Length: 333
Length: 139
Image 1 (tube, rainbow over the protein chains, first blue to last red):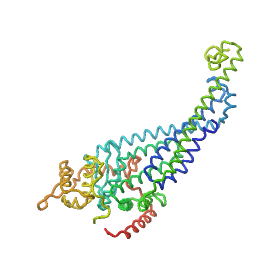
Image 2: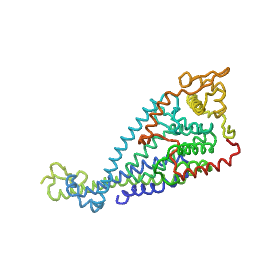
Image 3: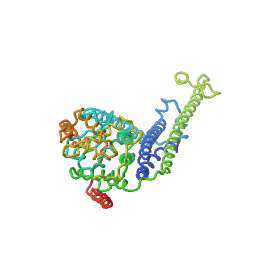
Image 4: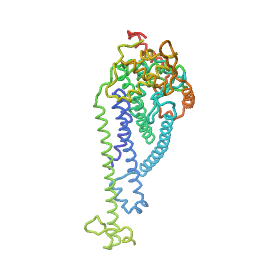
C-alpha cells in the first residue's frame, strides 16, 4: 500500500505531461478516445488515492482509532502516512469533489440550454442559417443537433469548402463530441493537472471532424482551405484583445491537413493503455491493502482489549482461539 | 469554379435515405444563402458536389419551399429560389448577443474556427498561399 497508493498520482502527472504532446501528431479519432479514457481513469485513480491517503492518515489519530476500535500502533507500524500528507490529501479531495459538483451543474445547465436552443432555432432542417454578416459556424448539440452557420460564413467559402464546413460540423454532432468535451471539462475540474489533457482533447476533436470532412468531400486540401478561409474571415471582423502569440489551433489544423494523413501507429496508445492499467491495478491493490490493514489493526486492538480485561467473554470473531470482541458491550471496563 | 479533381461521386452507400436527404437539404440551403441572388434548380445543382440528379434538386427545393423556408420567383419558364430571411434574422440577433457576451455557454458549441492572433494570421496566409500557388485549377 505504501507505494501503490501513490502510483495513480504519479501516473496522472506522467500522462498530464506526456499525453498531450504525444497525441497531437496521431490519428485524431483514437487520440480523442484515448484522452477521454485517460481522463476518466486518472481522475478515478486520483480521487481514490487521495481518499485512501486521507483515511489511513486520519485513522492514526488516537480519537479516531478509539471510535473505530482499531490499534493505532498496528496501523503505524504497517503503514506510516504522515498526518500532513493525509491533511493535504483530504483538502485536495474535498476541493476536487466540490469543484466537480459545481462544474457538473454548470455543464448540465449548458447542455440543457443547447438542447432547448436547438428546438427554438426555426425550421426542422439540419442546417440553420443566421442572417448575419459576421462569419460564424458551430454545432449546437441536441436531439437532433443543429448546424448553425451565418450568411457571412457561407459567403466567404467556395462551393466545395461550404460542403466541407457542413461535413465538419456534422462530424461533431454525429460523433457526440460534446460528450467528450463534458468528460474533459469535469475531469479537469477535479484535477487541474488534467487541463492540458482537456486542451489536447479539444484539438483532437477538431482534427477528427476535419479528417471526417476530408473523407466526405474527398479532399484534405479543400478542408484545409475552408478552415483557413473561415478563420481569416472571422479574424477580419473580430479580433480579441488577448491571445496566445502563435501556434494557435487553426494554423496547426491547416498544416496537418496539408501534410500527409497521420500514421495509424498503435505503440503510443498501447503504452498509454498500460499506464492506465497500472493506475487501476495499483488503486485496487492499495484499497485491498488498506482494508486488510484495518482488519489487522482491529484484531490487534481486540487482542489488547481482551488482554487488558482478562475476560474470556470478550473476544475476536476472526481469531480462532480467542472468541470475539463485541464492540458494544463486552469490552466495557 | 468547379474543382473537378476534388469531387467524390455519389453518396456513401451506408448512409440511410433520411439522413442523406437531411444532408442534401443542408447543402441546398447553404448554396442558396451563399448566393447573392435567387438561384434556379440548375444553378443549385452546379453548386453542389457529387453527381446529383436534377430531379433530386428539384424535389428538395420544392420540399424546402413547402416548409416555408424559401421564396419562389418566376424566371423565364422556370423558377428561381431564395431563402426566407425573417426568422433567420431573429435567430441571428439572439445568437449574436449570446456570442458577443462571451458567455461560457459557448462551452457546449463546437465552433468551426477559433480566433487567430496576428502571427497566426500571417502563418495561415503563408500556408494557404503556398497551397494556392501549388494549385493548377485556379479559383
